[in-house]
Image (tube, rainbow, N blue to C red):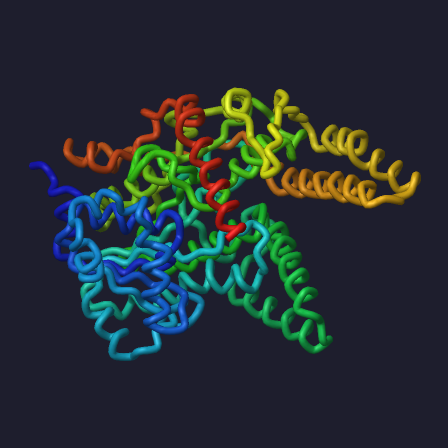
Length: 494
């Protein structure tokens, strides 16, 4: 007997989505509405002072013409009324109890109506303030679980995490849960309540010492990195996401919790149109700045397999999980990526990027055409620092020795110094990932895909093995990234 499928799964259902203004969340909202117009309601939780502000955010940040082009064409002049009949913006904040929903009556209505919760609220900044990251990535999960536990008709909670909560230098990263009290390196006891107390004490100490806002921000960022590395994680983002997973795991026996772990998300492959992206993702920092001539050197192993997955594949995988996850199974973690089924090496990505900018060079605001050279990769950080000394630090020291007597001297020095600081900062953040020999197991996800109906294989394709990476980079991703850069430049000028 063939299963019902994704469209039927959402028929007449009410879905609560947190972090609704995020890149993936927007695509998810569009895809649900397009696949199942008979979905009852989508509650979209956004950070806002009140309901009016929440509606304004949804209108300006989610109802974008490009994303909803298919639905606008379908409903024509009725699109707006149809959209607001399905979508209900919620002013709230996952970092607060009751998800920050102040209206008690509204909160109760949501608990009675909600069938599915999709928790996407997150701060994805690798070097976020520790207090901010804890509040959203860790305690946000706790508050979501507390809210979900009071939902009368709850069928499923989908927690969107990241595959990089499991991170080592090499090996296969399995679809296994993380448990509290265990640090990743196995050498320390990790107690989330103690981390919250530690954060609170540090903030209190800073305030007591009359630290400036700048000092508090800088100190809390530094503390986040230190705590992450103390327990074996690479950065504040993955550490606090890992702790969020731990809190979810503790409630698995009493709540229908499922976790999806995407790898590095890139622009859309096909839907709602190819190449849509918002914000510079992990690999895009290198792509854009290499194309602009600002990243001339980078430490990496060109043989390293990078695990990337287009955003629409992530959305489809989420819909697949919601529709096909078997109740009662012990498997509740799904990793979605490409390193097992369709691996691409950093060197291959770099060659495609070089080829693209040779054919379509970046043109600066002053009309200057940037001519790129073959990417200059260094196999070790020691080699990288040596070449940075030769090409940046020594010339900078010579410039200071000669003296900065003219405006042009100061401009040249500042330009070179900014380029040096930026290159080193990017290299140090991404170095652990550019030499990694890890792959991400996706057996649970593959098994779920095998259960899909033929129709759903067409409606929600989520297997990365069918992607031609060279074509994707040359014709879809890099053009999409550069188009986003252009949009941001225009917006900055307005």
